[in-house]
Image (tube, rainbow, N blue to C red; front, side, top):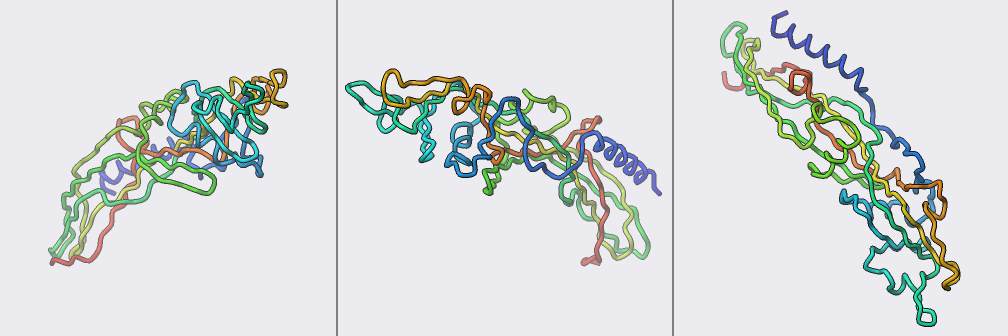
Length: 286
């Protein structure tokens, strides 16, 4: 065993030890519950499932907002429809919330529901080295790697893939401290020159898999007020503090709607953690 290989195996063992603390696992089926939340996903017949939370919490905004919701048709309007038909009905010169319409105020928040580690796919990280002699040669190759950030948005069975979303690191760092151990949203490059043994008549290179962290965010909406009018009169207005008039449900979530953000884990030495594999193939140029 060469000193270089021994060093790499030692580093890999340390990485696997780190993984035990991080927890390498398959992605969870649902996010962890927030106290007082109501999961819209349990209302399988509701037209709001898969529509309400993606409509009102899809841009990373946390400002106070006003929304009008029809629980029969699934229509959703923002504050611009305040006082307007069909949200409001004019009765005797007065405007009241129409049947099946609800006025909800509050703000979005974005808790991290889960986080897990996984190995990325193998990819070539070095140039090729070809040995056209009759014996094994130790040849120099340059290894290089750049981290990357990716994000998927899931709504029910629909999954869309995108790159870095600037608002995600801010929401994540507000929930858990990943600032030094995770490269999401940051450019990190790594490189080194090593010697590898290449058999005669072969071309060799180095592949590597990087250890990555995937973080799941389940957007929530905190309900400050929830209002409806049961008979379109001044006395028929009802205002509560909780989803659907239940004060126990201080926030709403749809566990079928979430973001998964993924990027490399940064080790204690300030570099990504790799699982290296040396590969070779018959040379085509000798």
